[in-house]
Amino acid sequence: MIPVNEPRIAKNALKYVSDCIKTGWISSSGSYLKEFEEKFAARFGVKHAITTTNGTASLHLAIAALNIGKGMEVILPAHTMMSSATAIVYTGAIPVLVDVERDSWNMDVTQIEKKITKKTKAIMPVHIYGLPVDMDPVIKLAKQYNLAIVEDAAESTGATYKNRLTGTLGDFGCFSFYANKIITTGEGGIVLTNDDELAAHARLLKDMAHSPKQRFLHEEIGFNYRMTNMQAALGLAQLEELDKYLKIKLWMAGMYNKLLSGLEGITLPVEKPCAKNVYWMYGILIEDSFGISREQFMVELLDRGVDSRTFFVPMNKQPALLKMGLFKRERYPIADEIGEKGLYIPSGLAITKAQIEKVCEAIIVVHKKFHGKNK
Ligand SMILES: *Cc1c(COP(=O)(O)O)cnc(C)c1O
Image (cartoon, rainbow, N blue to C red; front, side, top):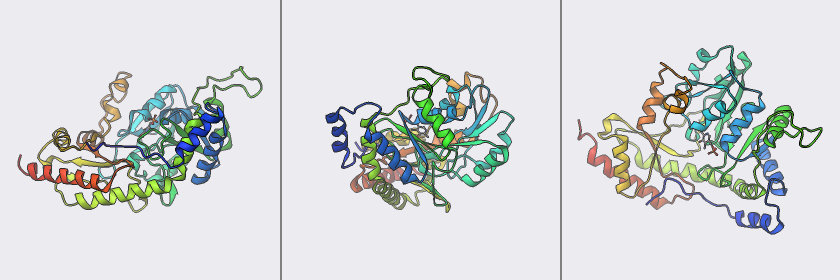
């Protein structure tokens, strides 16, 4: 079976992590945390990098640090992972959706302005599957309406928009280091910001909001979102190999693009002149003209030893959010459509040339078997 994702563990990981264990620095202070944050900030050219326990926590921390809370609104795409919306809901704020583009699967930025109300406090662009959102219009709207930008860069570590790194384009950039992400610490995350005050607030909230005047006195409700030194040690080793990882992703996508091009009924991911995809996952759409549904297609792949995953279920179809009375009578046709037609094929950093070829062979055989047969 070819898995959808296998992590790649960096060369120095074992050395750094065992150093933590040997020295006893296993919890949420230690030199690896400091070094990882400093090197991450330097690599991304930002002033502050603040480690967290995971990507969801990164998003929640960013929104909380902006003092966004009850009754306020945050605009995000309908097609994203549930974490983007839950992070907003955790603070008492309300997620407001915009539909996505049919080709990029990213937030349709032309639809943001009509969703802005007096309650809107922030826009959360999500660089989906590693492709940057068209950020200039987002930045312009944020300035015009005095809104914050919280980038969900969980899937786009290293991706650039007009030669600028995603996660550095807003007030906060939020990353995940889950096992299938481009850099992993097992579980983990980081938030980036250039704003000294926001950074200080995020650091305070992340560590239970102990009053700077007196420990164990709390003027705000904080969180325990502290990463361990062991995770940071793993992260540091991973960060050292980030450029190599990004090259592997591009090579993988290049092979898929070449081997899968011209198969009618299969839509491949795009790049835009201003947005460089890092192909966190290589997603495809099984169009109606293919002849079978996405579900049948995935079963056919599985029969041939190839694992895959569906795209995210859109936010407008999440029972947990609908139960809150959200998105009633709202329509997000593109998010619905790609949520039904999209899947991603094996795209992890440990993938081999032979595996990519086998995946493509399987897809081509299934295409031959069904394409045009069910018309
Ligand atoms: C992975 C992911 C997250 C959440 O990260 P966790 O580390 O799993 O909490 C948030 N948003 C997007 C778009 C993601 O892909």
